[in-house]
Image (cartoon, rainbow, N blue to C red; front, side, top):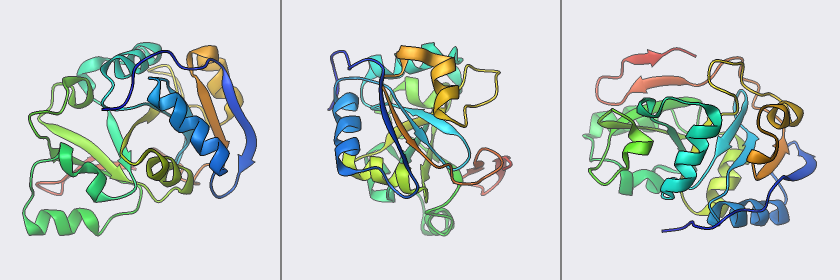
Length: 205
C-alpha cells in the first residue's frame, strides 16, 4: 500500500502539455501521491482531483475539500482493466466484453466491488465506478503511478467544475498539493456512467 505523510504544498506544473506531461512532472506527481497528497489534472471534460485510493486519509481529505457527500462514492480511473482487477468482482464474459468495447474512452462503469474495497470509495453502494480513460494525461499518470487513481471533478460540490488551472486554484488554493496542467479532452459534459451488469445508462454524457 502506498501513502502516508504530508505532501508538498502549492506546487504546480506550469507547462501546458498538449499530449502528456514530461517524465519529471510525472515523477513529481507520483511523489506527491505517495505522500498522501492531492493532485489536479485535466480529464476528458474538466479538471479532476486525484489521490491514492488506498490511502484512507487522502480520500477523506479529498472528500472534505470538495464538501462532497461521502455516501456518493468516487470514481477510479486507470490505464487498463488489469489495474482494477484487485478491486472488482468477476463479471461474466458478456458483461466484460461490453465494458471493454467502450474502453479506452469516456464511459464509466459501475462494477460489483470486492469486499475489501473501502467504503470511502464505493460510498453506500455495492459497486465501484471505474473508467479506463483515453485522455493522454490521465493514462500517463496512472501508468506512472502503476495503478488506478481516484478521479473526481475539481470543484466545490454544487458549483461548476474547473476547466483551467486558475479555476482550480480559485476553488482550492494550497489545499491541492500539485497541479498537472494540460489540455482537456474536448468533451462538453462529464463522462457517461453505465451499470456493468445490466448495461443501463445511469448518467448520460
